[in-house]
Amino acid sequence: MINYIWFGMIALSVVCAAVNGRLPELSSAVMDGAGSAVELSITLLGSMCAWLGFLKIAERGGLTRLLAMGFSPIIDRLFPDYREDQELKGKICMNLSANLLGLGNAATPLGLSAMEAMAKKAGGAMPSRGMILFVVINTASLQLLPVNMAAMRASCGSAEPFGVLPEIWLTSLGALVTAVTACKILEGRSGGLSGWSR
Amino acid sequence: MEQIGAAALPVIVGVILLFGFFRGVDVFDAFVTGAKDGIKTTLSLLPTLIGLIVAVNMVRASGLLEAVCGLCAPLIEGLGVSPEVLPLALLRPVSGSGSSAYTLSLLKQFGPDRETGKIASVLASSTETTFYAVTVYFGAVGCKKLRYTLPAALAGDCMAVVLSVVTVRFFAQI
Image (cartoon, rainbow over the protein chains, first blue to last red):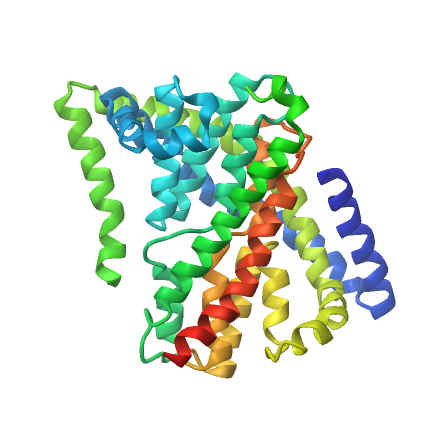
């Protein structure tokens, strides 16, 4: 799938740029893109190491297991395959909490660490249903306090930076529920693949 | 409220550290062990990131995004929403920094407390950068097949577009 999307994005861009006469801009976009990917991963490297370090402390101290037990009612329902695996459930909980608190640069490292643990369980290149649901939840964005947006609104002279909070909560919750429901429906349809689900 | 947001991170780190320390964990050793894993994960992610960001940059620089927006514009205008919101809806799943910049320009142009500004604010903070998350998460563990990931994630994104307009209009009336 990524194969086709990536090919489509680049092929269509080249055609489009040729038609619009934007080929020079396109060539600088390629180099700038590669450069900014390296910059991004250097920024990411710092937060990745720091958060995986804190995660390890939380795991060794038993905090993640505590978190997993607390969130069990929700997590077990969403991820029935990992019911027995407290450590993995702890990682999932850490990522979900980071998302809820709006700590974007903590959510990615914690999420990747959960993905690695799930991939180890699944084995092979085929993602399990748990991995798919986990990624889908991470593509939605349910957060309690969208501070970045509030700061952006304030900088544009908004009289009430947090004025759209109920709208954001309802919209992001609706989007999350829709995505999870879609996931569960599609998961049922490819039920014949249950051997790969674990 | 800004203070609560700023305090979240130090409080969490503090709780993690205190909890570990008093349960007898060698906290520094644990930190270093965990951090070491971060290097490997980040490095293995770099090729994926380069591929993704180059492609997204190309789409934006070539004018492909504007072309797609032009095609979809009549659709959104039919709903009475100002057509400037549309590029945001299309950009949001693809590029985080791009959609932030575009949201900022919408807020400046229409005013953050007017309908278009509110819709932009709600839409931009109600979804994540879907393609980035999908590529990075699956790229990191070497999954090539996505199965039904994208349809499910995009269903959520579409719902966010619809709900951002609906909720802003609903709360404006009460």
